[in-house]
Each structure stands twice: as C-alpha cells, then as structure tokens.
Image 1 (tube, rainbow, N blue to C red):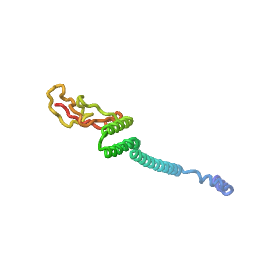
Image 2 (cartoon, helix red, strand yellow; image 1 turned 180 degrees about the vertical axis):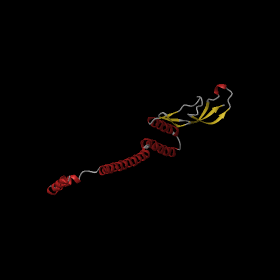
Image 3 (cartoon, rainbow, N blue to C red; image 1 turned 90 degrees about the horizontal axis):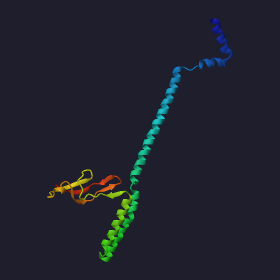
Image 4 (cartoon, rainbow, N blue to C red; image 1 turned 60 degrees about the horizontal axis):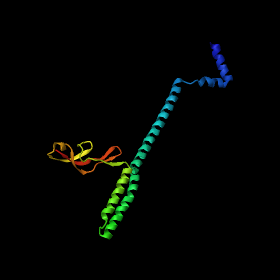
Length: 174
C-alpha cells in the first residue's frame, strides 16, 4: 500500500493536472447547492414576471374602464348639438315648431342607442315580474284579471343587449 501511495504522490509531482482532476471531483452537496440556487433564481424571476403581468393587466383594465363608453359619447355628441340648435331656434322663434324639432331629436337618439344594443322593455299590461320591474305602488282593481298585472308604466325599463340596464317602474293592480 505504501508503494501505491508513493506512486500517486510521484505522479502528482510529475503531473500537476492529475492532482487537480482528483480535487475537482464534485461534492454532491455542492452540486445540490448549485441546483438549489438556480431553482431559487428561476423562482424569483418567475415571481417578478408574474407581478409585472398583474400590474400591467390591472393598468390595462383601468384604462379600458375609463374609455369604455367613449364610442357612445361620440355617437351622442351630434344629438347634444341638435338640442343646442333646438334651444336657439326656440328662443328665436318664440317656441313655434318646437315639438317637431324635439320629436326629430328623440327619434335620432333612440336610433343611436338601439344601434348600440339598447332596447326598451314593454311592461304595460304584462304580469308583474320582480326580476324586470320595480313596483312603485299597488292600487286596488275591481277586475280580477288585472290583479298582479301592471296597470301603468311610470318609467320605462331598458335592456342593454340581454341584460337589464334599468328596471321599469310600474304600478301594479291589487
């Protein structure tokens, strides 16, 4: 054994690279530590990317909410201009022909809103439905067929596409 050990030392003295290769044998703990450090680094980077993604989507959502109704507002501006012209015409003509002008503006506004998905509810004479109507009051009726039905529509309800935008305010027969 001593001879083998002496031969090894002799080889190391004659060949310094052999000594380095034996010392470079990696310790399993060092390998695992390096892998752990790499995994931690990946984890930190992924976490940072995810936080940036969350921040970016939150900002995009806020911007979208701010500008969501801009197309509707743009479509309503000509109608607002028509109201201004109608008021000027009323002042100049002392109110003559006002009803015709206001009727035209109302029709233009209805068409603009319908193009954007707004539909009026037809509540008069139908059965009261709490999912669609808001009962302002109940009035007694003599006809049994009118009990639980809508007698009068005080304020029109509207749909926006397939969702109730505003509930119809109604008077219900009792």
